[in-house]
Image (cartoon, rainbow, N blue to C red; front, side, top):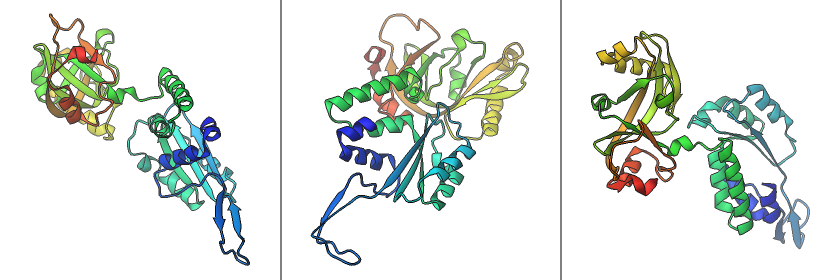
Length: 311
């Protein structure tokens, strides 16, 4: 941000406007007005500049301490015309205004804008204003740094294709299950799920969550979730799905099970054009959904396309 300001204060101002989800207009630099009436005079030229303070608190995980936020709020110079506190992290929850509702209201009482911000949105705003070769090169380096350190939520654009020839009946009920024993059964967090059978993926689902149920229908816990749904609700759904399949109940007597809760089914025709079946039980298509908001858009994108188009 310092380099952006040094290159162009105007671009820095545009960045702040893009980051803020309010009507507040932060003016960076002096303003020039002519023949403007003041309290006691009308100068021929007035050069004025509003003051502002911008704080960033950055976390590598979605774990902000209430006390620390309140100390930041108290730490602002109260004479500043505009005051902004950004909370920057790789947030998992989409409804950040609800998550930080209490803190936002407390900041508002002190005339401070508190704005939660994901690394993804931060980068997206930078992309809008970094239009010179110098700034684009800096931004590319920054994005590589964030990616190497896992700060960008790549799971949102990941399609997990899994061989499901023997479990299509479960898929029809909006669930996929497999042992929670690691190895071939390990699954990266992904937003999208594609059941593979007969040389193609015929449906795209969104994954609401993976729930792990310990042996003998024991303790259940959330491995990860993509939707803002209560843990108890997801666990209850997973238990109900498991109870529908006696052979899964029998399997669960010896191994814990992962229960993928699938939603928003959309028809597609994503074809494995090469000979033979899948070499492994799963295949990841990274960044395949960067331009898609949901399973419907991804299904439309992949309809009648070949795997080789995205490998």
